[in-house]
Length: 276
Image (cartoon, rainbow, N blue to C red):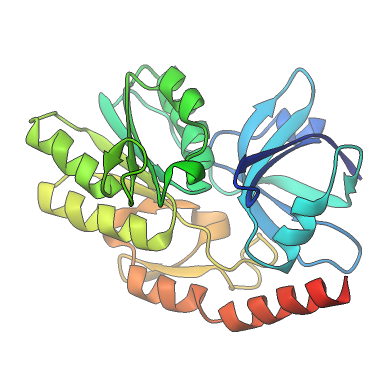
C-alpha cells in the first residue's frame, strides 16, 4: 500500500497532483520514466508519468487529468488514503546530454511530464526555453515551476485569456522567426498537439522528441497493447519508450488506436457516477 501524503487541484478540479509514499521507486526513477498503479484488488492498471520525486522523503508526485472511471476514482482520494499497487520505474530513461538550446513544449498534464524531463536536461548544462499552452488561463499548470527552470517561458491560450493568444506552435514559429538556433524540441501533451509540433519542426529540420502514452496494460511489453509505429516499425511504448523521435511516429494510427475505447470509457465513468 502507498499512502497519499499530499493532494492538490491544479486546474478547475480536473487536473490533480497526488504525492504518494514510494521510497524504493523514488530512489531509482529518472526523469521521463513512469509507473503503473492499481487502486484496489479489482482495479485496472493505469500508467502515469512521474512529475516529481523526493528521495529524501521517499515520495513521488503524479499529475493527471480526470477523464475516465479510474482517474475519477484516483482523483477522489484524499490525504491519508492509499493506493494498493505502484510499480516502477518503467520505460527507458533518457540520456541527458549537453546539446545546446532546448525548447520544451507542454500542454495539459503533459506540462508536468515536460518539467521533469527538462530538469534532466538542465542538470546536463543545456539552455532551456519553455512553451506551455492550454484552452484558457484556468487550465495552465505549473507556470511558476517552469519559469524557475527555464531561461524564458512563453505561455499561450487558445482563447487569448492569458499570455499569447494562439497555439503552442504559434509561439514556436515566433522563436524560429527570431532566428533562434534550436538544437532540440521536446513536445509532451495531447497527441494532436505533438503531431502539430512535429509537422512544424520537420519543415525547419529541428530534431524533436515526443513522449507517448498509448493504451497500456502490463508495462512489460508482453501484452502488446501499447504498440506504436515508429519509422515503419512496431515499437512498444512501455519498453522502447515512452520517448521517440517525433518525426518517425505514425500519429494518425496512434490517434485512431487511442480513440478505440473512448465510448466504453465514457460509459464506464457514467455508470460509476450513477452507482456511486
